[in-house]
Image 1 (cartoon, helix red, strand yellow):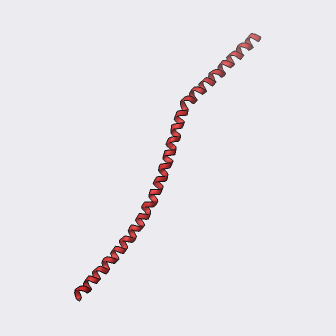
Image 2: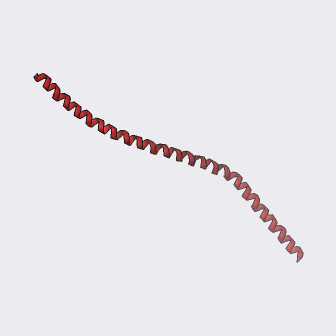
Length: 89
């Protein structure tokens, strides 16, 4: 009976060692992948920040362009009016 328990203990230790070896092996293979994914995540986060900033700038430029277009039309109207006045004079 003691021999049987000793063999079970050896088997259990072997299984635990195999488990530890497998976990270490998988960790060594997965760690570079996780590191690469973290780098990609950081790059995408930075890219997202840049896109948000650009969207804000484009929106501001669209507003300015709209104001400039309105002002240009008003100036064209004033210019036409003044040209007509000059012709009359």
